[in-house]
Image (cartoon, rainbow, N blue to C red; front, side):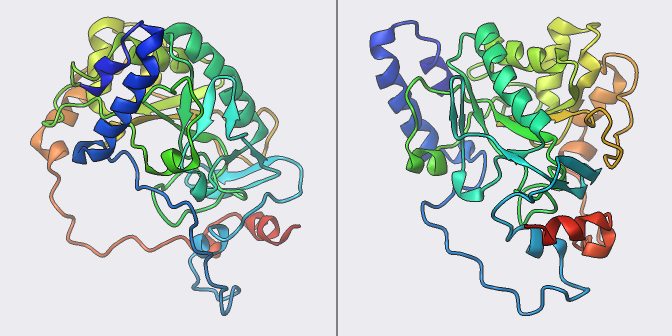
Length: 316
């Protein structure tokens, strides 16, 4: 229902339609794309012993409020590393707005910031949307986060909402409270035809076609929908089915050229991914996985990260 409001071509009613959609999305329990933020989050208390060997690394990186004044460098792997010399994506641009500002996660390697600035223009061109709503990128110095992600640690990952950017600038409160658009059916077996549009397909296709993009993480239902019309395309293999991701898609860039500290991810498998491997995602084992019964995975410690990450934390 909310998606239909964005299809109108009547400029005089666009703002009213947007506000109506905000109300629909805010009150719907199905549209909690991310935890909502706070206008004035409480500062975290100081750590009694920041050098304690058993202190989770997220306690340190989650308290960093500014970038390390070092040359830009991605250190380690996407899910086990840190980021030096990060740049902050401006909260507003010609074709983008950053969401959940209270999280302070709109930082990335300069390659990622430049990519998002360029890609937001391209996305607007192929979809007709005013632009993109940008979710989490990385923390100011990368590293593990308190909540929400295992990856996003080296400044090369970004979440892009499936809700189009409105023409007007969102208020700070709207950026903290507004939820994205769920484009997947409640049974998770396919996309919701009342929400999923050709414009969503066009934006994700454009992302996958970008040479700098290593992979795009999407909900399996989105992959299934795109296999119906895009099967056999060279870029389809970049679309990797991943649980959740029904309110946003996740773009991951290749390691920057010449950055020897960055650990590359294995290339995506050959083929378009529209095969039996995709079918597994719609089995009961995938949709309703049984608890492992084992202990929870322990959080990363500083000793688990590349040694240079200590210098990244300690830098001015």
